[in-house]
Image 1 (cartoon, rainbow, N blue to C red):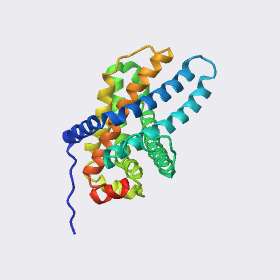
Image 2: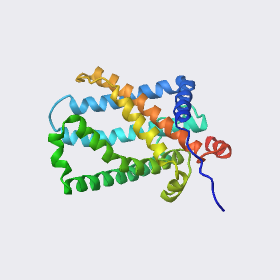
Image 3: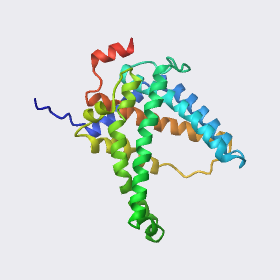
Image 4: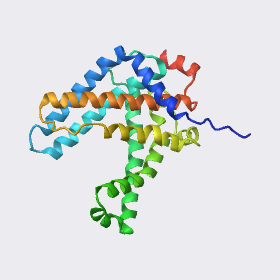
Length: 249
């Protein structure tokens, strides 16, 4: 039987994510504050001195992955299940472990594609031309080269909200759910964050207070991106009312 593709509405997906976070702003605010404070303190630990930066960066990066895993799961459940952001904040369960596992898998695919593209560009001599091409052309070329990796990343990213609402899914399921919507997902999950990041001021952050303010802002921006993914996941049919009742139980 022929199936009909459920095309993702790009603009309304972004608007719905913004509206959902605004409606839940009181519940979300203190979650963002805690995540921003934790992440900012970890950043300050790395850059407060120049000693052992590589070692500290690795350890702090692992700790931040845990912080943002908790943040992501809470935001996904807030958007999809209307769950209070404070619920289970300091609790690490099998749900968070599975979420982190899928996050690592998805990013491994992303890094693999980037590495293959870099090898290909090096093989045809493109990398050698970048220093002479100028900043604008070099950045444009690298952006275009990132699109295949972005395409794979967004097609698999629906595994993350699915895991946050306790669904046990596979890569094949994610690929089938996002069929026909790959480039729409690239727009909302890849291009929108890039455009937002260009609006960020370039700051010389050195103090603990500066890092806390910076990471608080980044936690808010990350939450918006997570909410967009949640709304897209639901719009594509990955989550419906019966599942919402079960996940919220």
